[in-house]
Length: 253
Image (cartoon, rainbow, N blue to C red; front, side):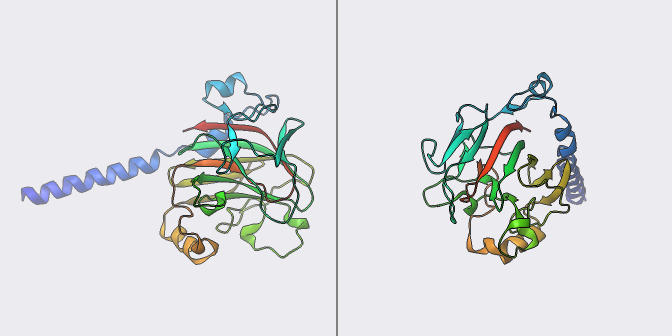
């Protein structure tokens, strides 16, 4: 009888812990509301500083960033008019830049602008190791692409705002080529939220049966370590086309 009672008590405790863990996830919209849209580009307002936001790029120096599997900053990137951008254009991936620091739970904010038929992305939970050639071999990607002018037919999980090769965007609030878009990403444990121009475009929970099915049945089946890491670097992808990135901010949660 005592054994049965103990099992019941332990079961109740387990349920409480699970429920507490689920309810403890931060509200992505509340995090989004902490950003000050009136703050000058590449600066933090007093409000943002008080809420714990960090500026990852001041529009002048590449401090805090380096090339993937490199010690320094790659020559294929430059700073132009207060934004990171590429100097090489071609059909294949070039050198991505990524944060020096690794992050587990965070909110990430960046403005980006594309040229016609541009292709890029923000990749996160990246493992940096010589055994990997590109960040996308391990990290999920918030897709950035001018799909309207892309020369080939694209799947819905390839268009702007998608979680690349996994989840298509639920909405298409992207702005025309040449205009600044605002990308917002929240990673809170296994819960991931992607927003584009004030609209939630992707929400998913990592490591669920549905996530594993998608992960193992598509492109990532060929990459055994994709999605494996819960902590990692964040990168701006250089896919051989010109994109600008500015106003890069992050908050650890």
